[in-house]
Image (cartoon, rainbow, N blue to C red; front, side, top):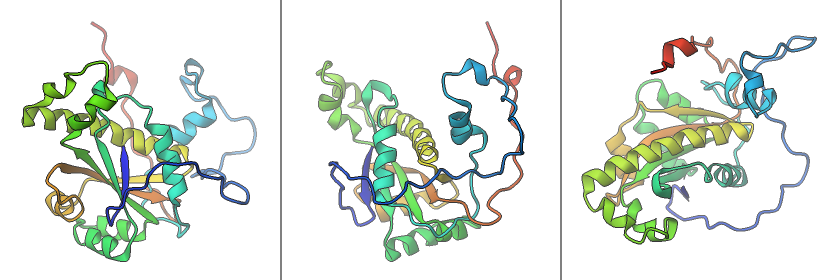
Length: 239
């Protein structure tokens, strides 16, 4: 996953000092009732602690408003340095990320949002544009070195696009979990002018935007009621 600013300047990895002062506590979207907390169903079958399970899944929500607290490049770098270890086919890593920070980039992005998504983008401290690199195969000699002919498997542009979009979509999910692991909230958006956003921010013809993700700490009245989830027997079958 490569991360760029909206102006296209690549941020090279390097050592980062911890910011001064105490580290911010992860946001908890709801207060817990007093007394012992009941263990969630299935929690004992997982290696991850119940607190971490809640942070990533049970109490994590998609916010509709954001607090004005900024999101730093160091926080985004920490997210990347965690989620880069998640798997993709043949270690493709086709996800590319542009951070829309400048006023001109934010204005251009807002114009291409549909309906209520425009206000959500306007209020978010940081907006990330997540795209698939359709020329990911050029990096395979470095990323998958034990198979020298790996890039040749993706000579066909249709096969290459299908694999790029599939694996970048996996990485979008990883990215959202990484944002939550940083104690922040992620608001993924699919309702926007895909062709317009791709042309504006990825004008080289080799990228396809998959999602826009608002990032920050939730603001007032950020949550809609939790929607139902399918139960195990509705999803899983045994053959």
